[in-house]
Amino acid sequence: MDQCSEDGCENPAAIRLSIPWADDRDVCTAHGRALVQQDGVVAEVLDGAEVDWR
Image (spheres, rainbow, N blue to C red):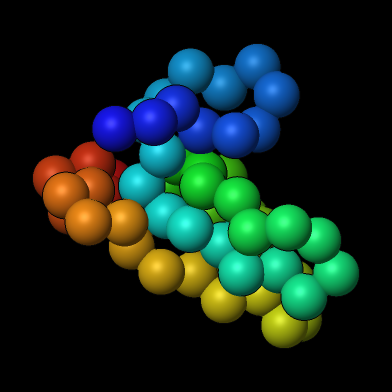
């Protein structure tokens, strides 16, 4: 599994964010929880990442 795409984060990516004003990106659960609160952002759990959902 890939690493979170946020700078400085070494956690495994667990969520793919579809962001209308930017490219899609794969992030960890912590970053996903924060970023998905923005209007228009849609989150999808990555295959095999269910165990990392914390």
